[in-house]
Length: 68
Figure (cartoon, rainbow, N blue to C red):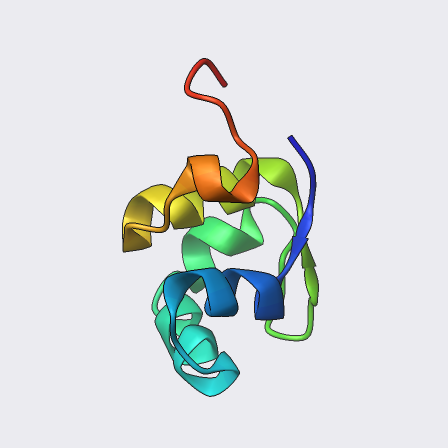
């Protein structure tokens, strides 16, 4: 498990960076619990896993195995 850039997750989701940022705007409360702001570029593993589940991004493609 590792941290990912927002741009890497946007690419994995098949959307532009601006669309991905728009998606995350609606999740500010949850993301702020992990210390993530709108200016954060690097997302910690716990946030990456949560975002993948929220938006249907294939975790295995990013290197997460099913037991994490």
